[in-house]
Image 1 (tube, rainbow, N blue to C red):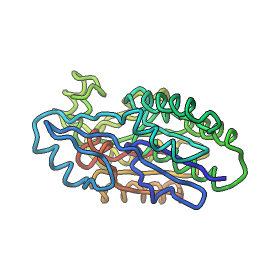
Image 2: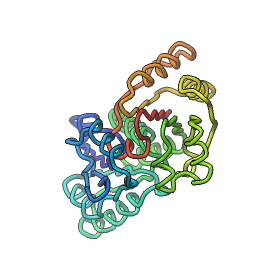
Image 3: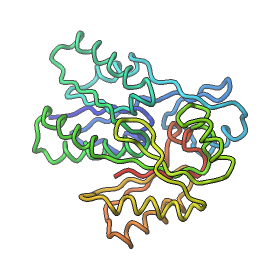
Length: 278
């Protein structure tokens, strides 16, 4: 049985990362807006250039979710369809995907279709998608069983991040403006993450990046039954590699993936941001 998996571009993955003989993976791009310029977060986007554009422009960068039709167009092409989106609390993308699903159910009543709110973003959403790939490839579960199991994995997934620049999170209302501005001005490193319900929560503060990375490693180390870890970064391979080494040397973790963030996650994480999911 062949599966069609669909995600939005906040997942930081590309089709090549999930495509197999039994999986067709599609990424529906989110639109990034800097000033008057609209940028499609597709495979042609250069993250380096995008981050530099954000730095050079004084306006607050924004995002626009894909239209229902953008999702529906991909859904029409496949069967056994599973859609995984950024948290519904952070974007209207989930609502757009749900509207598309309703359209497709009317057009093709026999299609199997499931829409999952990842309740997270960036590395967290990508981590869930990679786990979904594992569930499908083991060839032990039916479509319905896979949707139940990936729902359980979603509820268990944790996402944490360490950012060097909080400006875009503050301006886009993802972090309290008063508290966020004070922290940003003081150059304090803030450790945040999902709160288990799709929203952002503050977990700690520190004065240096290396201390923050050590704190992130400790958070993962305290968890039980962590069998895989995903680390993403905004042009910051040095800190991503340092965090990976900490997790390996201090806690013995082995299945750790690192990758560069795509445009959407980079917009909020800003230069040198680090996100970890497990």
